[in-house]
Image (cartoon, rainbow, N blue to C red):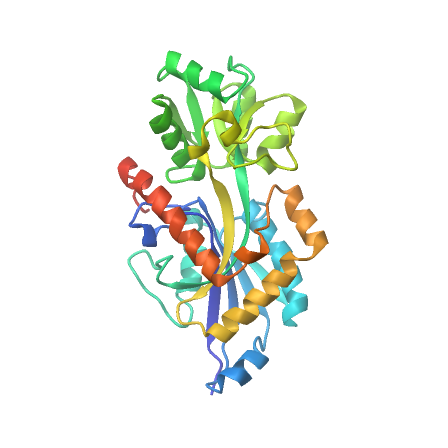
Length: 335
């Protein structure tokens, strides 16, 4: 009996790119990774678990090389290679805000087909929450505010006179911008860019006033004094940026947000295989060198009690419940 190809996948926060019902989201707020593996002939569950994987695994990163998703994917792949005893090969499948790569995993055996090619809740089995990375709310040096409260006051005095850069409809910055306006009663333009880098460059140049950006993109400019940071979208300060207050400290805890990555398998993947993948990934994330490497990129590893399939499923559900109403109210649609 011939082996059939199966792929398993990972996702992140609520929507990485779209506006269908929460279970059909594919937005940029998600950090998607995907792992391809081979199934074995129909043998006993014990024998299958012992033999898996029987050949190299392909991890699909549905974004271009060099981004945060790609970084964590490559770090994870190297560690899991040792644990699983098979090479883990990275394949970048970009396009459509991650939907193309993630859909490819969803269509792997066992097949799962829906309106957007995949359903991020129904078509995947949670394996492990890998890590998350809050964003920084950064501003041009020309903005006459020194903290978040002063910035909000300035926005209220200048409705529709400033702009915030995003990386497109449904992206983290877009949703956070909408949430900021809703919670503070402010109005400003939301300008779409092709990536966080170009948006950050325009903040530094004073072409736009603000943006929400990952630490890898924004922190060097803040440290160089070419931009200012008002807050980090987390409950506490980042170890790599201890001088930047959390949104809780800044007085707007509703802005909690993280770009998160989670490992998922296709619907119907046997629990013994999910357990083996979970064990391999947990072992990888426990390596001090890997933890340090991720910390340098602004990622935070979850506590041990959250490193279970059930914890990832609960986290995904909570993220959907938080962000779907905002997506729906804004009329963001899947593309």
